[in-house]
Structure formats: C-alpha cells, structure tokens
Length: 246
Ligand SMILES: [Zn+2]
Image (cartoon, rainbow, N blue to C red; front, side, top):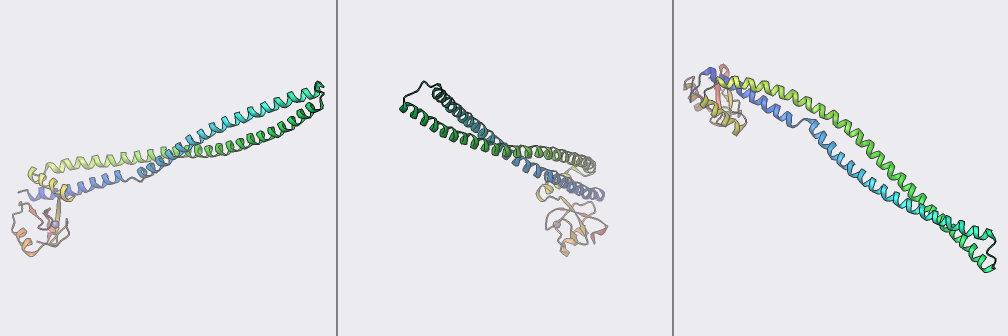
C-alpha cells in the first residue's frame, strides 16, 4: 500500500481529529446535567405518586368527616326533639319522663363522642394537607431546577455540536488528501483499536507505546518513503516523521 509522505502525515491529523470527535461524543453522553435531570425525573415521579396518595387520603377523610358531621347533626336534632317534648309539658308520666331524660343524657354522650371523631378527622386532614403542600412545594422547586438544567444541557449540546461540526469539516478536508485504500485501512483499524494511525517517535509506536525491535526498525528504514508501514505489535499504520529516530 502506498501513500506519499505528505499524505501519511495527514493520517496523523486525521487521527487527532478523530480523537477530538470521540472526546466530544464522550462529553455529549456524559454531561453532568443529563445525570442530574435523571435524578430529578426519579424524584419527580416519587412526588407525583406521593401527591396522588395524599389526594386519595384527603378525599377519603373528607367523606369520613361529612359522615361524622351528619351523624352529629342527627343526634342534635333528636336531642332538640326530646327537649322540646320535655319542655312542652306533654309528657307527665314519671317513668316516661325519666326515660326521656336518660335518653337525652345518652344522646349527649353520643354527640360528644361523634364530635371527637370529627375533630380527629379534621386533625388528620390537616396533617395530610401539610404533607401534600410540602410535596407540591418540592415539585415546584424541582420544575425550576429541571428547566435550568435543561437549558444548561441544551447550550452545552449546542456548543459541542458546533465543535463537532468544525472537526467533521476539517476531517473531510484532510481525508480528501489520503488515498482511498489507505483511508479504508485507517477506518478499519480505527474501528478495531480506536486509533488507526500513530506516529513513530524515537523508535516507539505512539499507538501501543512499544519500542520496536531493531529488525522491524531496520525494515522500516529500508522501506520506501511512500510505503505505508505498520506496527508489528498493534498493526496500526505507523507514520514516519523527523522525530522517528530512523
Ligand atoms: Zn503499535
């Protein structure tokens, strides 16, 4: 495989651009805002569930309170009825009077028990309402945070996208100077190893960082300048420069 020494140097530029593109891609995928937004999303769904639960509890308690209040009202009406009978003087039999009086007493006890229940339900409602308000407040705060993070994430993505577009454009330009078969080999090696071409510097392959054997170095020394040579260790394309130590 052949490529002019200039075209071979372009391979190093291509490798730099590909490294930059990989860095940008990594940055795009690991933006801290992405993980933070995921956390917010998880918390947000916990809050939604909590609010639904509190609302269900509140409507149950509201029904319970209405029922207890209705019971109180019924008892009160019966007390009123009994009292007006007592006050009217229509009931004169001693036995009937004493029955009515003891019924009023027992109705009063029943009323105060029911009023206890109403108070208890009201207190429970207050507690649940407090909890629901806390959840709703947290939800509002979370929505604000999410909006802020989303806009930060989006502007970071825009910036990364611009840098990537520039690198892509340079890559197209650089790739145009490289023979097609060499470029195909480079891309294949890049897919396998992440890096397709490396500089030979002071007898060391900058791709795998191994120092080449004297035999291999001699073979490279003997190779024509336009011969595409490979590292015997990692098989990457080795690019010779003034620093190669040949
Ligand atoms: Zn190597």
